[in-house]
Image (tube, rainbow, N blue to C red; front, side):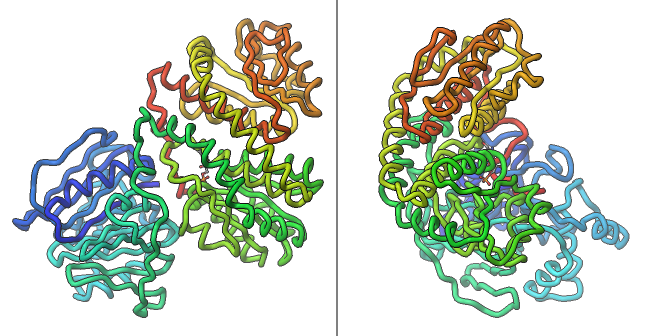
Length: 586
Ligand code: M6R
C-alpha cells in the first residue's frame, strides 16, 4: 500500500525529485513519509514525519542519490519512528519497504538477542538489521540480499540503499516496482506515474527478480540469480495525465475524464471486446472477480450478461473467491477486474484459480501490473492514471467493457456502441448540471443516513454509489435492492431521510416506483433519477434512457454527490481517511 521512490543520477537535486515522487505516490498511503538522501558532502540526510506531505519541502542540498517512502500503517502505529526509511545499527543499510514481512517477529527476536537495537515497531526495520548481520559474515552485497530474500515471508517491494557504496538493491514479490531509465539517470518507484515526469522508458520488475543499481550502471537478475537483459517499454501517457491540471481535485478531474475514456473504449477497443467475448463463449463457466468498486462492476456484469447476452456469469468478491473456487476446471474462465492490478485479495484468489488451470483474463488499468502479467489475456482499461483514492473513471470503463462484451456475445455490438455514445452524452449533460447535485449535497450533508435504491443492474449501481459516498464523505450510505427494503431496512426511514432512487425505464421501472411510494409514505426525501418525472420524487435528476448503459450516467451522479458531500463537510476527497489507493495487504 505504501509508495517508494528512489533516484541515482547525475542531477544535483535528488532531494527535490524524491519529494516530488513521494507527492505523486502519496495516494498509496499518507499516514507518514520520510527520505534518506546522501548529500554531495557525504552526509546522510534523514527526515521522517507523520501526516501528509502536503506542501513539504526539504532544505536546499546538493545530492544525486536517495530514497523516500509514503506509509500506510500496518505494523506499528502512525509515529515518526515508524515512518520509513529504516536504518541498521551501523547506519550502513537503509531500507524502504512496501508490503509485510510476515515472519518479522521471529527474525526480530533473534536480532535483538544478538545485540541489535530497534527504533520502531515496524516489520520493515528487520530488513535493515538482518542485512547488516549478513554483511558481517559475507561482504558481497548481492549474496547478503539473496540470503535475506530466502529468509523473509510475505509480499514485498524493497529498495535497500547502501550509502557508502552508493548502491541500491531492489527486489519484489507481489508488490509492484518500476524502474525508469534516462541517460545515466535511474528512477525506482511503486508506480510509473511517479517516474513519467522524467522518462517514459520503464521496466516493471517481475516477482523474484533482483536489480542492483549504482553509478556504474544497472544489472537485472532473474529468480535463479542469472543476469538478464532489461526490456524497457515506452509508456503511452504523458506527465499531464498525472497532474491535477485545472481541477481542484483528482477526483473531479477523473469524473470529468469519463466521457473521453468511455467513448475511446467504444471506438478503439472493439477487437479486445470481441476476443474476450470469444473466450467467454468457449469457456465452461465464467467468473468475475474483484474487490470494492471493482466487485460492484462485477456484480453489474452478472446482470448485463444475463439480460443482454443471456449468459449466467458467476461473481465473487476477491477476498472470498478462494473459498468458492473448488469447482474450477481447466476449461473455466476467470475475469479479474482491478484498476491497479495489484489488489492482493484479488491476486491471491486468482493465483489459486490459475493453480487449478483455469484461464485468466485481466481487466486492469495498469500496464505491467501484477494482474496484467499474470493473466493469459489482458484487457487494458486505458483510462489513464487514476490518482484519487475513490475509483470513478476506472469503474465506468469496466462497465463499458462488460456492457460491450455482453452485446458482442449477443451479436448486437453496434447497438451497444450506440448506447454507450448515448451514455457519454448523458454524462456530459450531468457535468453541465453539476451545480444541482452540489446543491442537493449541501441540503443532505447533515443527515444521518442516505439510502440508495435500485433493482436489477441499478441495484449494483446502488451499491457502488453508496460506497462512493461513504468513502469520501464519511456519511453512512447504503445501497439496497429496492424490493428488499420492505423486508427490514424500511424501519430506518424517518422524516427527511434522503433516498436516491435509480429508476431507469427498463423492466424494473414500475416496481422501483412502488419503492419510492413506500419510502415517501414514511417521510423520506426522495431523489428520483430517471428519464421520467413523477410526483413522488421530491427532486428529480433527469437521465435519458440509454438502455442498460444508463447505469453509467447514474453512477456518475453518485460520484458527484460523494465529491460535493466531501467538500461540504470539509474533507479532502482525494485522500479519504484510513484508505489507500492500492490495497496490497490482506
Ligand atoms: O485497484 P482495484 O480496482 O483492484 O481496487 C479495488 C478496491 O480496493 C477499490 O475499488 C476501492 O474499493 C476503491 N477505494 C473504491 O473507490
